[in-house]
Image (cartoon, rainbow, N blue to C red; front, side, top):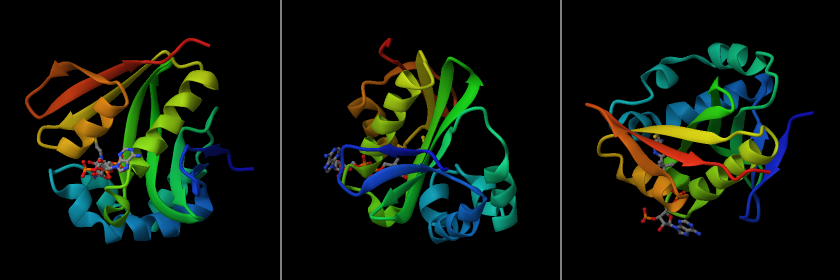
Length: 164
Ligand SMILES: CC(C)(COP(=O)(O)OP(=O)(O)OC[C@H]1O[C@@H](n2cnc3c(N)ncnc32)[C@H](O)[C@@H]1OP(=O)(O)O)[C@@H](O)C(=O)NCCC(=O)NCCS
């Protein structure tokens, strides 16, 4: 059974991505190539074929960390926890361009952070944002992240998660 996480927005939920989501996910990525690569990010994502996503989504994981963002049952984006150094996690998120501007990504990431804290017992979450990605900066600031380091190409944001 795929793990499902509710969000505060009616009709918006996160569902763990599985092999059978690969074709739909690939199609969503391909519809959003310009949106995703505007600042030079997501090069591997847009170059990948559906079969690569099928292999990736079929990989066994100890806990679900890769979720599709579904609005009224339709895949509109993706949010990820990257278990680089648990209980510290990296964060990834993107939304189809036609679903932006409505607070959906903020709600999706908020639900993911809640899950990271309560179910994965995460303590810290980090995100890297390329300079100029003002919408991503704004999303993280809305959710209480702070800049902890500045590099040539990006800034690192950090937030602690509430203890259980
Ligand atoms: C980063 C990204 C997810 C942000 O998307 P977004 O639509 O701006 O974020 P949200 O869905 O949270 O929506 C926020 C917008 O909705 C508005 N909004 C409406 N209701 C809202 C609510 N209840 N809560 C929060 N925002 C709300 C906000 O004012 C904001 O609008 P503005 O940009 O005009 O100020 C999106 O731009 C994206 O996918 N970019 C490409 C991939 C990417 O860069 N990913 C991040 C890599 S670090």
